[in-house]
Length: 117
Image (tube, rainbow, N blue to C red):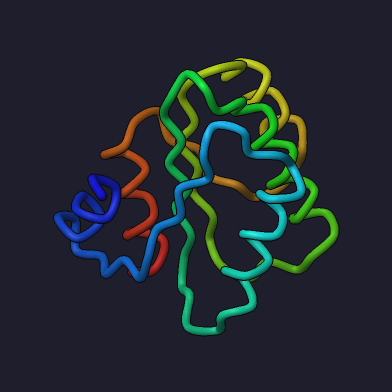
């Protein structure tokens, strides 16, 4: 809920949120992103992962897989913090995908709002 609050604070209008849970698998990340990108009213996507249970490299791999297999036409901002974050950042950086990264929640929210302004 804090993610939605900070987006609103910076002038955005969040539609919803999804809690992926600690045992998230790559295909679940792909499926969630495909659902979001199929909605033509979605203008940007901000993914905020913070925690010790979620493997952030799994999140990053799922995002890259969707980008390489699907045409995503909305800005995607990702803030990853937690288990395997260095590997996750490497995956995103080496992917060549136009995924914006943020180091903290506020930076991510600002980038997501700016992307649609």
